[in-house]
Image (tube, rainbow over all chains, first blue to last red; front, side, top):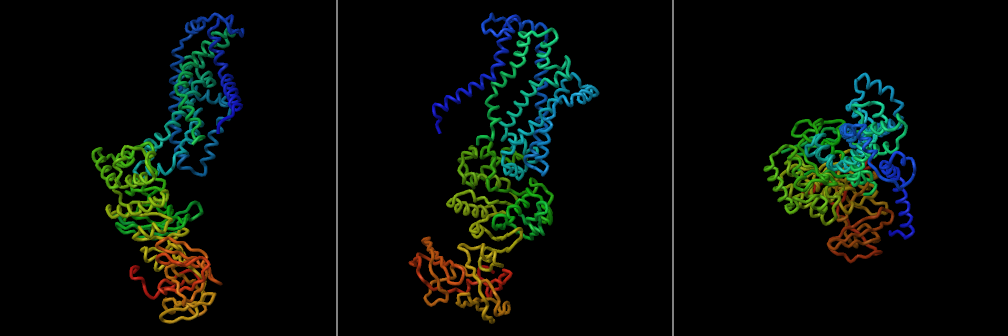
Length: 271
Length: 367
């Protein structure tokens, strides 16, 4: 069916409207980061661009060490979550019991609990275990935080794989690990990849746990941004410069992986 | 070399029993077909033999060893699935070599075995293609090839031809028979198509509702069905079944009367029925022929001309409709009034419980 000109115009307006609406805060942030502190609070579009804010930010904080923490913690959390989620989703998709549905819902329901509700117990646990301000602590908490979503996504991807293919593998002599490694993972690779990408993005942008459980040593870029917000009053230009630098890597990463992401997130919707 | 014994095999899903105690012997190199209507448990039984479904009760023995708790990978069986279940991300060669690769067979030997299977199945030009670039028949052959390369003790086929069109199905039936001949292997084949069962089997197992109705050679089942279910299920067109009453019993035969009057003599053993018993009379469609002096009168409702055969569908006053199969092309037309004679050897009697009454003589080919 071909769209009428009116339909095309409407979808043009809505599509671009939504895109610009979502993009505006980021664009404004980038714009502000090139202003001077004096211009930063005025909404003017014309100003003399300068790199002063970036210079200040670099001078005051060690960007690279924060960025390295972010990379290590995000990748670590994602890999750990996948390590647990792949077998879990396999079991639920191909060997379901009457409790599988309930387990899936229960896992998701943990995401309905506000994290602040468990902050004190987790903080105490971390303190006792000596995990405060450690990368391994954050890797653990991020893996746990994303586990429900990762399991859910993998479960839906696995569901698309016909059981008979795995059974054929079993008849061919594959044990469970062989089934997963030689058949299931290659068949669902786009899905596993997009799940990993989403988990990576969620880890990268997570602020609550990183702010509360780290101080300096293991602090990721979210803490780097936060360090430019309150203490000395609001310096919007510097804050924007720090934020831009924090989101830049993941933005570039997302740009390159957008095909995978779109393919994965709409998987199953279109046959 | 492989024999299989099933001893009181049972399967329950919760409180619901789907396989209700099956005893069966499968000899080495036998081609056994499980046949039955959908939901009769034939696929479940095959999957239990394969190890893909747990066995709730009974013993499954291969070569005398109980293998109930042996995993599918270690039973030494190969299975061809209805959906083919090829690995979509692998080439034909990789598909066929997968089992050998898992078994850590050296590459040179792997290639040799795959090439050999490809030769038998005429798949050589397609070895580097992926399943999605193959036709249905080719995919089917790859699935069979995947089974062949492993040299399994027993081949299991789960309705392998039901996704193919009619012409290809006929061709694959012959190929499978040729393969059975060439490989000299034990094969178990599940189908709901009684033509596949008749043409391929050494031994047919007719299943219904989780029970074995009859086990025997195709002609045994055709000429001596043990009960009404088998009589109705085996044979196409279906056996004509109609209510009748015993009017005379003797040592050489029993006469029954149809509700509409005609009397028909059936050669069953004496002493198995008494006058006045209600029975079911079964007559194969080829056991009826047009004869102006015949006892049964009917009106032709429909004529199916197959060229070599003509099928007449008749309505009979006061009795169930009948199908008549005539050799060659017949001139009879719809609405004609005709009379039919009956070949006594094609007649069967079934008692009230649906069990066949023993016939006088066994068919020479169905001893």
